[in-house]
Amino acid sequence: MTDRRFFSYAGPFSLTELAAMVGAHLSNCADPSILIDDIMPLGSAGNSHLSFMENERYRESLAHSKAGACLISEIHASGAPADMVLLLTDRPRQNFARISQRFYPEEMPGPGLHATASIAASARVGKDCRIDAGAVVGENVSIGDGCWLGANCVIGDWVRIGPVTRIGSNASLSHCDIGARCFIYSGVRIGQPGFGFERDHAGVIKMPQLGRVVIEDDVEIGANSTVDRGSGPDTIIGRGTMIDNLVQIGHNVQIGKGCIIVSMVGIAGSTTVGDHVVIAGQSGVAGHLDIGNGVRIAARSGVTKNIKDGETVGGMPAVPIRDYRRQTAVIRSLVRQARQRLGKG
Image (cartoon, rainbow, N blue to C red):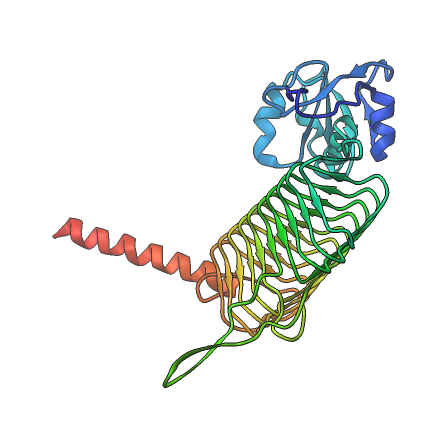
């Protein structure tokens, strides 16, 4: 069960209320007024809990679950225990997420300015903001209404932050404009110089990094990720994009809307990523590439060429996913044959 010391709890809810939240149809329900007081996984849920089942691999967990209610599709409903209330829906996992948000809504703490925060006289801070201990806000910064600046974060001169955006503790922002309702997690670095150099016989010449970072509305950037500012053109992250922890975004990169970029991904400079792209963990994308809309990149891939809209790729170097799977199968076959030969010898 969720430790409610750390999370705001808004339950319980009746079965009728839960079904209405997501447009689910109640089945096997004798009393829709019964209260559900928490959300739990199938394996640990009790009779006052709501769970969900979407993947066939959890059919056995479903059969043995003690959950009082379960979000489930009709194709899996026959595997549920006889005494389990079913909330029938085409999207169990998504609707479980929506209901979870209702049980445990994210809440901003009350507004306030800590005595140890440092705010430049020329900075403009909106209404109902919270600025925690040790935060530094530079000259001519603009902060929208309802923002929360965490402890020891540093907001450089002239940075603009849209309303209801949260900046985590120890984050640092410079040379950037941040949209509304963004969440920049702890330790994020935004706007530092990109990695740009030229060389001649005398050594390395640093290339001036004269662009910004532009982050559109509803973006999240996970802990300890870094986003370099542009060298001339801006680095841009499109609306609604979700970036995991420990991700590196190079200078001049342009990322489209609604992308998902998983932990330990690196995107080199001047690459363009389309809308609704998924880049799985530990993948690397070379510079000056065009990644199309709706592309999916498998974990631990190395992308060295442009990818067309809608393609799924994997491997290093990344190739169409069917080719990658064939390559993997061939390698396994060769290894198996080699072991057989060694065994015969």
